[in-house]
Image 1 (cartoon, rainbow, N blue to C red):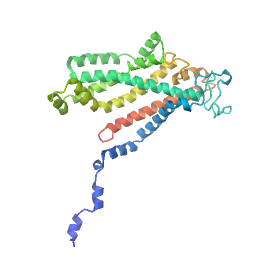
Image 2: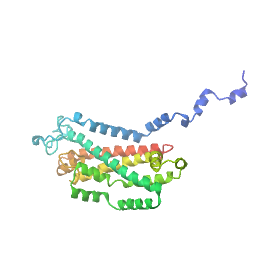
Image 3: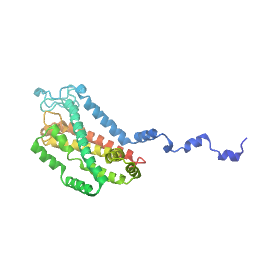
Image 4: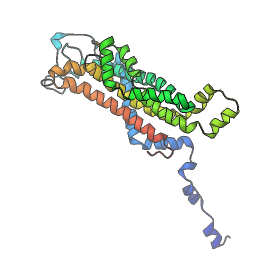
Length: 309
């Protein structure tokens, strides 16, 4: 029989289990717990996933052809109005086109422009930032001058001027925004690369004879990927808003392509009598940008060492 002194010192199984810290749990379980505990990231991911699925399945979900016109059915109010009909749940526009169908196909345009512009700007900005941060010296001075020049140019004015010269279209908007929104990628990657270039694992790779492209692509780039993902979500939302602005002014996506900014522009003449023609695409834009920003903020928090800002 053990003595009372030994029993009081020896921990029980329950005490040992309680003493285990969350850090001793499997890594995937800790990440899952942090993911589910971040309400903003969960909500933003759910909203963004719903919009993406709607855009991908638009040809099968849309109740009507988004390009089909019927002037006898023009400006039918949404179903919650007294004169609304379930045949056109969100009503019709000035040309009799179904608003719900155009809204679904408009999500494809917004997501395509946002993703493509973020991809182009990410490639340009990341390349310049990594080169400036790793090599330093004259390379850093030249690239920093280019970044400063870009920051001195107002994006909206440059986009308006360029689109008015070359004409607005889907391809023009994607390329234009992609070449205008790279500065944040460059600034972030330059700073992050400067912090990493003197790290021990970089010195070890250099001593082992690793080439510069190998170090940049296999050692530095993976370690700054979390910051790049956060910046990409912010620039994606920025590109979507800029596209809506250009389309609203008639210099972006051209009709009859369904675009949320273009839908707002086409409905502005009826905003006092049929306000839903601008409220519906406007709310859709707000929800999409909100979802992307929530995902970006959540990824930033998740990339922190302890899950906090």
